[in-house]
Image (tube, helix red, strand yellow):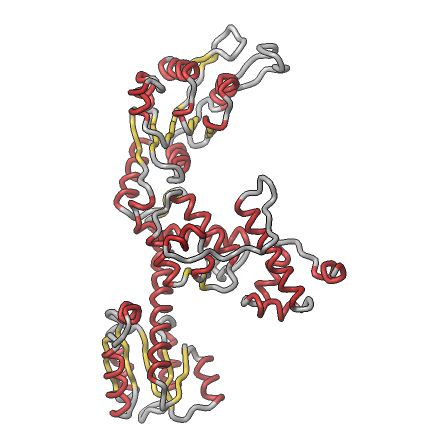
Length: 483
């Protein structure tokens, strides 16, 4: 009986067998049908090419010796118009020369008769899985380019399409907007999209993280101050509101504002002017306000920690961003978006067209789809960046996934070098880069500084290792001399 994974791969997959021996066709058809594949057969080149002209197959099993034409000729003709469908050559006369010729003409594999059933089924399963993954990658990239990318915000789910539509509607107006959603859902990206689609697009966009500014200097930060207004005020200072004049100010974490600042912000919304700290003359501005919060402002109003009148002034139009766990269908699109982004940044695993050639293995992708993503899109972005930095080959395996994803499935995360201690205050990319540097140096030492051998140990192409060595600023000669 085929296992569940094989059945999943084989589900609805259609295979064409082109072979002139009836016994071969029959035995392959029985074997593959039992594995869950749909199978069609052709007894010669002419009927095989006719079948290929009428429909699309997931894989072709092509005999090298056919009565009317050589299998290599058929292979070459098919590859002139179809470079994607996997073709596996079958022959009872296997030679190195014919195998090399078949691969040069575009064959994906070469199998000699008689074959081992288990190996044949496993090879077909892997080839079909790879073909489907490649087709899905192409489809996703096309969707990203054509339909589901909105100012670097990615999503095809109904929830995100509704958000995009609302942004388009509210952007041209002057209305205040409140963007709500959990941390990591992309609230600042939405604010930037509103600004970019507004008449203010060529004017300043000023982001303010309210939660990171101490309460005692918030008024000065937002509204500015004049020289001598307080101890240390050695010069006049423009606040964020004056800097954003004729543009948009984005007030993130609006729920962290103190009561006095809330009162001043309310007055600015009601009458677009303010008085800098220590000044006597008010300053008038034309600023659109977009605020954001991951807190429930209604509950804060009920408890008296947020002004009710300010809440209603801010909440003229609310755009609520759904958490990633509620838009699971967007995960593959986001992964491909971030793969392209970080492969370009790291100058690795890029195709001639400039797209990422990285992809998660089917098992890794399944685990990512199953994760709850409490950190939302930001957490997924970090997971993809981690994979790009640590990847040794184009298919990213399960052991490259973050610990939180692995632990959900009862797996242990890959251990860092025993002596690894991240530098104080280091960011995640900096820590990952440090680990990568240590691992490469360690394998170079173990390989007696032979880069070809180190590449084999790390299971990466020599060119990839060289790129990483250059990017990390490693001088192999100096390291070797130092021992």
